[in-house]
Image (cartoon, rainbow, N blue to C red; front, top):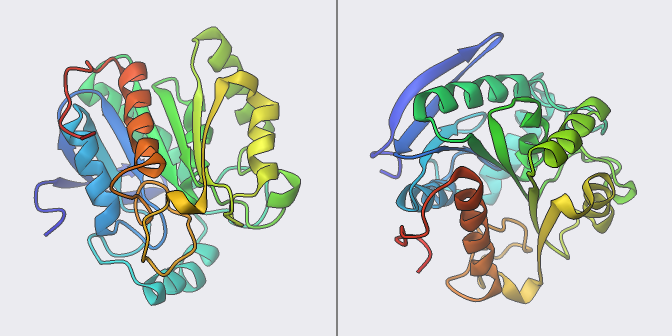
Length: 266
């Protein structure tokens, strides 16, 4: 069972209650799963964060925790779940999803529980932009956006799922606290167009670090166009695998974890 080593508890921050899986020791990193849910490859990435010296908090926002990924399962979650639930704003830019308030509360809880200088957060796919919107919570100091795919409309014009107030807060914190933002994508990914990453660069300048991959960098044989940088399309070696190493190094630097812990990157 991929979640057998995780402690499960419910976390409530009005109006939402969601299950959260926790494992590890050290500073906290919140792993916000991609479509279709908390599937085994997301959990495997979280396991590598645990081995690198972090406490992982993995909320389950949709889907069935631990259920393997299939195309049919993904389509079902998109059409029958994510796009019609009030927790998510999937279509229009300029605002974050209501579930982000709950994630901010989870970040405060994780920081209180684990200590350290702050909390890391990584969103993937539909949740990719959530880590940036979470920056209005002071505990969040290491945001990572992996293939941020919302909003579904306006991506080619640079739309992002963050409000102007959240952008201003993040920009101010990046400067005052000497923080930065990490973004990852495949260059060919139609869900993460050039204009979206150009918008992040416009808003945050050199505080926005990118890892942009070619199709050839993806794990072969998945039967899917390259999209999921740290899970489905993560290869065993090469630039694609280096994207994971950079993500872990980013969390280590920001959260103060020693480079002496080497279990994950080999």
